[in-house]
Image (cartoon, rainbow, N blue to C red; front, side):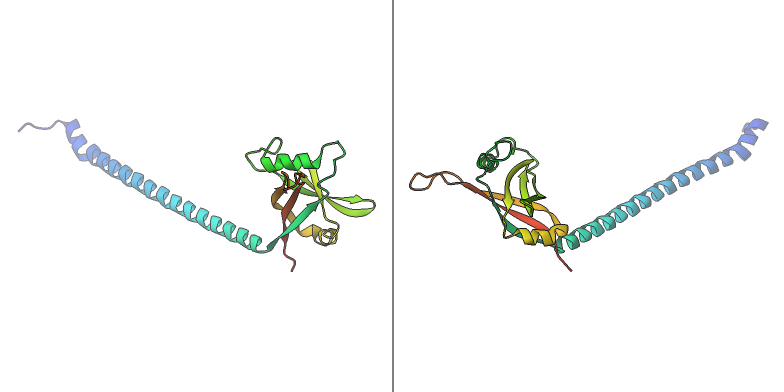
Length: 182
């Protein structure tokens, strides 16, 4: 057997064992980093699930604290100040014609105002007035205006002709959402 040279002895005794220890440490550290990253991902996912559950519970509590009431829209046979017929607007709304053909749904809003010095509430669809809240319902809206959340849905009905050939006017009913009073 051949005698090892000095540099070979140094490699065998000092550098190879140190190199093996460094390699073992790096493999251990890499595995530890993977475990820590996986634990952090699990913690983030659990925190997100808890946050989503809390948000859903808050949303359900908010929805439970609301009430939906149905109102008939009146004044649907008048013309608007710009000369547009509300009946034409309701027909277009009923059939989904422009400007009421949005993929996102039609935006129905109620605006507070005054008519002959008395409170009044106008119903708008995509910025076009389609009617008003009835005079009988105005006191309710005045009392609950601060609790008003919005219009959740609308139904346009009527149109066409009756058995005698007379045209049937379009009408509208809206579902309004209010926060429940304590």
